[in-house]
Image 1 (cartoon, rainbow, N blue to C red):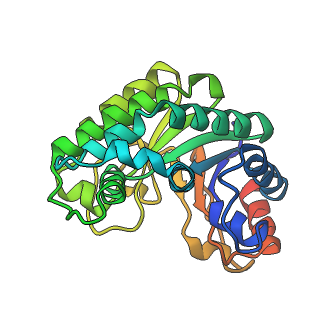
Image 2 (image 1 turned 30 degrees about the vertical axis):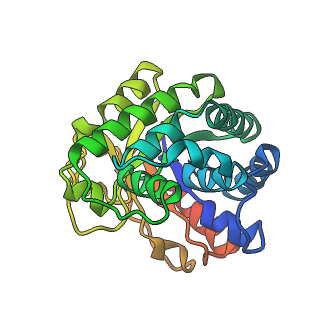
Length: 270
């Protein structure tokens, strides 16, 4: 590879530019893929991260009866276990990802919300009056097992990898790479990319040999560089020469298409 490949997390930009500020059409696989197909026409990306959380929010709003199967237990990870093992959810998720991979001319990786966020989200949805007890490393670890079994069903879809998001809550309860081993094992078995995504948080996380998108300074793998959101504010942004395999960027909703195109051209000509 003579130049770095570009990896975008661009759903906020897609909503701003292609959806008129509205949410992506999560409930329709073809319409969703059409948005990303148009997005690719603007960005010419090598890889897109597609966020799972939007799909999950929309799916549960259309299938509220599933909440009954998730409710009534004090153990905080019970709800997310019942949710992620729902066969209809898995089938719909597979259809959604298969359609997206087939229609978009770029690699697609599935960006998974943080384990802690998923646990709390499912528990409160199923038990609206419940309080969130303190999470443990076992909660994070167990959720990785449920997630691994869910994404394993996506093997025929054509995805290129999975990204596991890290939150303050995950790190504060002692989450380490080994806690995500079930997901890592699935990715390695299917020859998928596995990476962590770490939004701006105070805590550090040793991602070892895995990419850490958005905050790669603690990763031992130096084949990726993450761009700051300010890079996309105007065309006067400068880029230092680099030799990384991947350039990763999270395109903000405020970015203007003409500025984005020009700055991508800069990246491509380095």
